[in-house]
Amino acid sequence: MSDEKTTRRDLGALAAGGALAAACATLPARPAEAYQGNMERAVSDLYGALASLRESTPNKGGHRERAIALVQQAIEETEAGIQYANATGGGGAGGPP
Image (cartoon, rainbow, N blue to C red; front, side, top):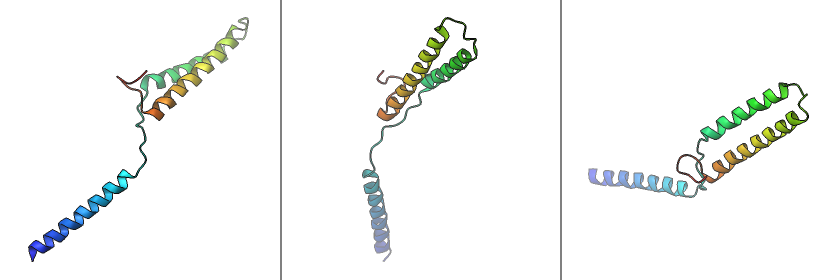
């Protein structure tokens, strides 16, 4: 009789494990988000540069304004790169550029 109880218990555990495996197999695959440490630091530094440029006096013959626009563009491109890496699972050492 104890063999029968053990067998039923084993079958129940096996069925539960199989159901869990089937449920996990139906989940959509998502690429892993890699931490983009260098890119995150670059964005932070760019925001610092942008703040400094905005606080400077505007007597630079239009070069300050051009620098502000270029730093804003660099922020957008760097953030886009982070989003791309997160969406494709890229980034980190040894990954695609």
